[in-house]
Image (cartoon, rainbow, N blue to C red; front, side, top):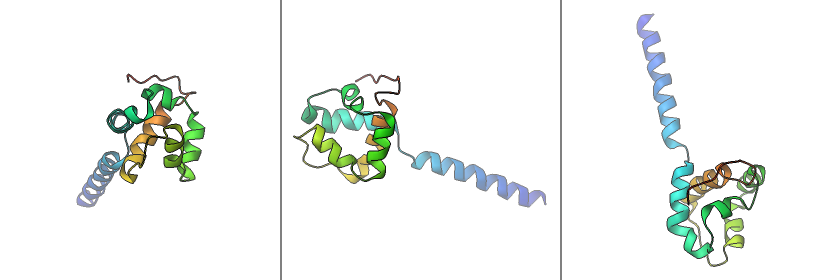
Length: 105
């Protein structure tokens, strides 16, 4: 019984660590915005994130139109890699107009 509980506890711990590591990150999204989009957008990340509320950013993400919205707000952006969208979403969501948070970029 003790061995079984030990295995279960280890599994739960590993699962929680793995899901944390695999999740997107607002700080990484901020860095991506600064590196890949800021120049093309012509505005800082705070202004870009404040273009929509958190709920609006969520709706854009869920409907698959996040990249389209980025291109609409930043016409000079040609393409946004799919691998960047989760982190960019987390950044935009974290600092949406109704969040009360202000990024340092």
